[in-house]
Length: 321
Image (cartoon, rainbow, N blue to C red; front, side, top):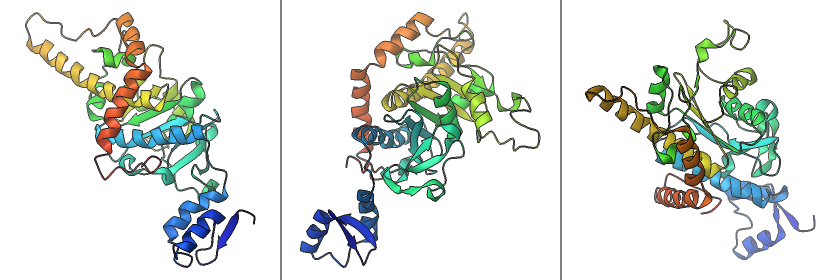
């Protein structure tokens, strides 16, 4: 087998260089199964540098979103495959805080079909562990918006409260410029208002975006001028131009909701004050999004956030640790 050696006791294939290193260490007959599983990827086509770079950020993103309380046990983040725009990468169904490289799956955007584990390409198709029911949020947004390269879906409670009363978010601060300054605020996806051809009466009305028509309906709710759609009774979907960008947007959408809530309350309690905060102008929001989401500022935020999650043993990014 040339540069490969079949390790008989563990029934896996490893590189000859690794085999001899383990032989020297007297590990020939005691190779741990976990190590065997990780070495199995050597027998496959390794992900490109581009994919590995995006996947590294994707794992950090899952951990950061949990650390910042944007997601809890539920919610997810994905990235378009930088080597193939018709595919995207996200973890299978696992709590974001627990995701490692072995949980990442490459999906077709067409019908959100699992292709393979991103870092163990011997696991393909139906052998891939079950994905998130709502991966169609991601597939259909990517399908509708070719420029989008990363997506967050979260059940952030202080964002849900706005959709519950039919009030969209408006950017209240420069770091939340991508929330936008639409007249009626961020668009709201109302599951119960969907036509029967998208959500039949006999289908589960469980708020989950679990198929292509529902994903298309959500994607169609986005409007120019805002990277965010609120989901009534459910959460939010956020588009981004990179993994780091979409995490930044999701976090500051949550923070913007906090500011807008407090400003609304203060307005109601203050004689002569506006009953609802006006927020930023469309120009201010747009220009702020451009300046505040520049690479240098995103990198500054990322350095802080990765530094924070690195101090918590729960979070394991095995692509850079």
